[in-house]
Length: 184
Image 1 (tube, one colour):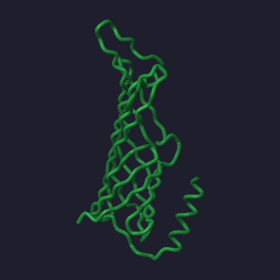
Image 2 (cartoon, one colour; image 1 turned 90 degrees about the vertical axis):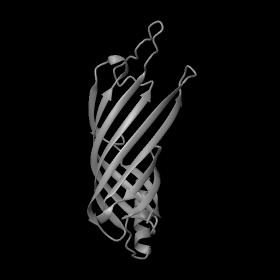
Image 3 (tube, helix red, strand yellow; image 1 turned 180 degrees about the vertical axis):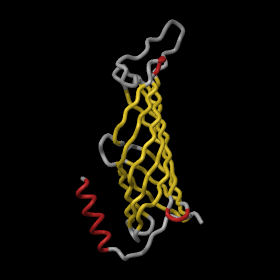
Image 4 (spheres, helix red, strand yellow; image 1 turned 30 degrees about the horizontal axis):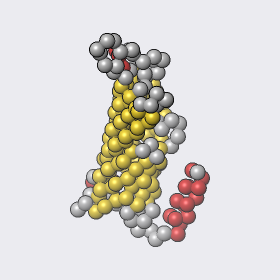
């Protein structure tokens, strides 16, 4: 799948007119494969800030549902920019609230009489990575991001917190797209 994306991107760049595209003062609306809806804003000199929201509901074997909420924000600083592509240093922070997940502790707390079962794990994840943005025309861009993340996991029921150092997106490159509007 990545090879197909790369071949299509290269062919489009070779065949398209070389019009310089800027994000300065523009608003980007998009999504990524992790089910996030994103809003991005271009600052001056190619810098970009943005955020995303993801909601996922999963059905459990007992007939109940668990809700997963993700909120994230990022800042991208240009390292190298061309007319149709750019390389950015990406800094971000994500917050996740996950029902029915014990944070890797192995057990969920059992509710006492009259006390609700708090099964929500919270995870704070700062990350840093490299992002490549490729423009497909003036208003549509594809990005691919890869980097390192540190999960600060806080399980339910007062269990010990844990940390996890990893590459983000589960060892995959995070791919997203944006449609850019003129906000000026």
